[in-house]
Length: 139
Image (cartoon, rainbow, N blue to C red; front, side):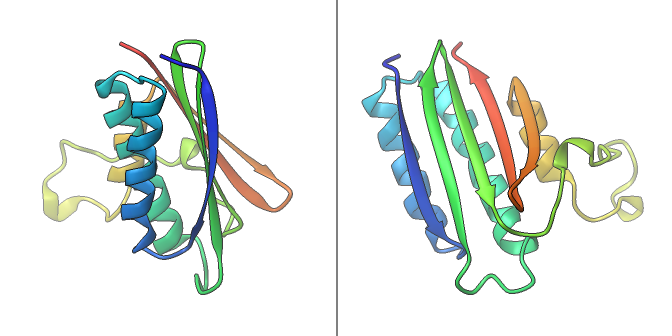
């Protein structure tokens, strides 16, 4: 894997996710990120950005998200940054996957997916923004 980084700016619109996915794949190809690592990180980023757009803002019109990717030290690191409502997904309760569907609360599966896919998930609130960073080691 070749080391490098990129910062992407997205409008808080679901339509931007296709462009984001394309740019993440291009970054992975350029930096020779193993396909399994790239797939997992791209899926996690897709879920995090979708959640931020759909649930993070009272009104997403005119809002922006920043996605930073870094290939370094044998891992792919991605940060999703938004100025939406404060939300720490690392403390969200895990869904009860064994409960019958009709008894489960809505939501939480995307965060569970991200936690399951990534080697490390970290959240912080900095300057009024959510900064969620995920890391995946190359395998």
